[in-house]
Image (tube, rainbow, N blue to C red):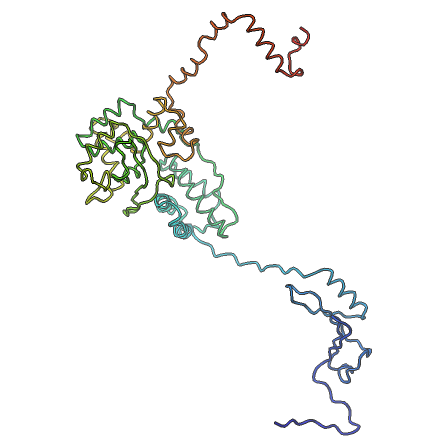
Length: 446
């Protein structure tokens, strides 16, 4: 490989450089000579010219530097370099992301349901789907969510009431809308939730709702007698009305969960039907619980057991077809037939009590019998006793108020017979325990 070099004739001028020269003044300070500058030809240090200086200062990230051009004298270049070094690394603003494309409410609901599948209970997802399909989609479904305003929400509430919706339904629909739009805020589609803090009528009191669907002990006895001789129906109703099982929980017990000797029933699982698909899940409290059963109820379960396979039975206590769990609506249907025979229906033959009403009946009868309020939550499966106190405290019998007043019975007669020495001693004790600044003026000067 050969290399050819260009020769210059003696006396000829220096050839024009192909690029400028970067003269090093000191570490971090350079002078950038232009191509036309004489210093770029001979590269002689310290030549006077009008070329700019270049300083190296910290870059935007550790390990990086940036070059800044400074025009003027070398002193000005040094001063500018010191100033940039003291200022530190420049803050680079993060690029503003493009806002996500707008979604309609229908599209938002579809995405929300997809992301919550497996996270929320199937019944909750089914309720949201029904609210969207029947009540939200016809009014707001095709509207972009960034165009939904508080006025739209208020008009939706007014339309629901005009159509005869109950307060409970309206509150449920707005709760669904609020939940969807809250997700839109969290996902960056909206900056605020227009359904937040919407003024709605107060819900019906729990006392009124529970009073409408609670049976007395005599009415419960009539209902049990009206089961048509079916031990399966009778024991199922008693499980809800005595042990307080929920509708989905009464489907789940197996014979291995029943202790007829120890009078206990273990509630481990619950079933529900979502769009015709039967799904098994844990109880509402996310944990199993042991509930007490009466000796009479245990005897009826023992009489029912031979129909389910006898002593060695391990299947469901109240099985469906082929030994599988019964349909989620079977408890409603069995209870409705018994209520019809007992006459507990309205003018339109609609049952007056639901399976959940039997659960309220269990709480009512336990409280009326004087069972402590701290014990009832364990039977019902409430994780927080405050829930029981808030929902069922109104069911305490009025006679229990008399018991509270009876604690002070005989106070007047005791006051007549108490000795003066006891009264004087009590007065001295009270006076000694009372701060001087809080005593009555008459006592201070007495």
